[in-house]
Image 1 (cartoon, rainbow, N blue to C red):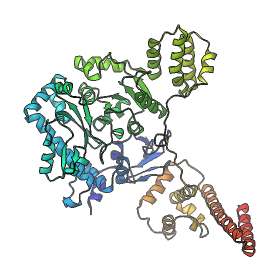
Image 2 (cartoon, rainbow, N blue to C red):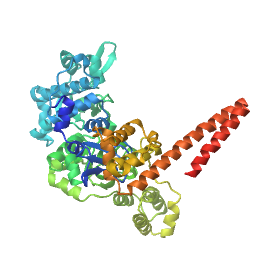
Image 3 (tube, one colour):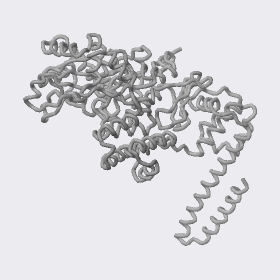
Image 4 (cartoon, rainbow, N blue to C red):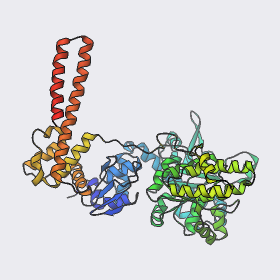
Length: 572
């Protein structure tokens, strides 16, 4: 009998189906495996068990049920994960006391109500009709306007704020949602005024922020107003962690195994409308490590339609460098001068398809654009070309591919390969990740825990032939939860299902076949040695303290104790 919403959700949702919405899974026997989304790795160590309805990464040690996965990957609390999964399962949760709703929930509500307000303004106001006409002329269809929930923020100081206050929300909350700006103690005004509104969604298609494009272009000529305004960083929204459109396009990205990376909201909508639905936008930022981690869940192939001037925008180059360092394969879509994807699609959607089909590798693109900018016949031209291209070549990990481009550069500069190689030794690899957040995660799992889990998983797999190896001498080396499993097995009890027991069985399934008896004995002996070493470290510390106090008798006793223990260690 299902006793709670949690049980009902678990009963309706399959762990494989939930996780597949976020990352690519591959069949591995009775289980599924993937590259872990929670730490950087090349060899897949993340496993999902449909039989036990759990997941576990044997690289970073994280694991759990569907709730644990959604909490971890979305960065949310349990209550929010419950709401997300209830929505996926089609389960209506009981209404909460409004006072008990979390800050996050209220911000979601404000964002959703604001989207409806903007949609209504677009549909029903006189100014909104002009905006809609503009959008239609830009090639955005009625269907796309509805699907992407486009709207209009009226050109008034408190239109949205007054609407939300009327729905029971405080002006302080509206400010926290990034929709109002505080001018003084009791004076707030709307952040978005007179703008075409593009809601930004999280991976569960919930509105978390907005991009607003100014509509009255005549007004911008009279006073300096930003063409685009985005929601500032809030409890829900961080533009460096969001990719516009990914909630809708991730399935297509995974299916086609490449992602079209564009710069604007309209570019995404038009590409989707034209049939190339594997597309996202960075919404006004250069690529960030967090965005790359998001994309890596679905594909490691990026086709960028950015302005890729090798001698130009450093932020764009930094983002591309980050992607290359993270192992992405990058191609460049060469755009007609002065045009973006939306312009190309408006003229003819087939032209966009052809440009995508002709995308070139990043290094090939850089070669062609660099040689077009400088005179390779003149010494100063050769210097500038090599200055830009050598760091890119040096960063190529494959030596054969690197050698090819060294030869190509030497040929086109009309110099010997040896000169190019010598010069390359003097240059840096180019832009690299600059801080620990951007670098590959290094996961250290304690040796003791690895030994415990290896021995315990093998015992659980074959208790009849290996349980006798866990004698009372070795039992204390295991943590209490594992000891309980062993005691229950000794007494012939049926093991209660728990994440720990499921994890141990999964570990035994996915790891290579070994001689269980020998492996368990090796683990036990090493665990005993580790325990002895820890005790020796403790005695060494006591000896230091006794020496400071000049307690000769205690020093002698401790040294004798140390020798005895050390002798046991050497016997092993």
